[in-house]
Amino acid sequence: MDQYSYSQPSSSSVESVKSRDRERDHYGIPMKCWCGGELQLIPNTTGEYQGRLCYKCARSADGCLHLHKFWDKAIVEEIHDLHKKLLERDDHINYLTLGPNGTKVYPSMLSAQIEYHGEEMGHIRQLVREIGDGYEELSSNKGYSLC
Ligand SMILES: [Zn+2]
Image (tube, helix red, strand yellow):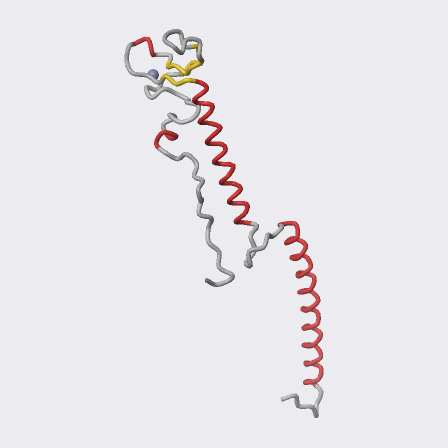
């Protein structure tokens, strides 16, 4: 492999939740019921999980199937998703700050190097200009042939 070639990070072991569940708000904190109804965060009133906070559709009294999700489960999923996104960002930052030989590159140092090389280029341009001027002066003098 060419020492100057790069490859995108593999997204490695980390991939945020981009599943249909996330798109449909079934993963993490739900925004709306799949029926389009607003959600309420209320304590569960029946069963063994009585008192446990849950997201319930405001239309759930109609007897149809609606979203019902425990608050703590939603929070755990949300934290899990945020953790994955954080790891993805770390991967991306590592990718952006990895030099061609595998060493770490610091953006502030790059800026200083760019500034230094810019000044060097200005100096070289000035020298080339002076050499060009000298060449024209010599070639315009009769009796001298530079070629
Ligand atoms: Zn609903």
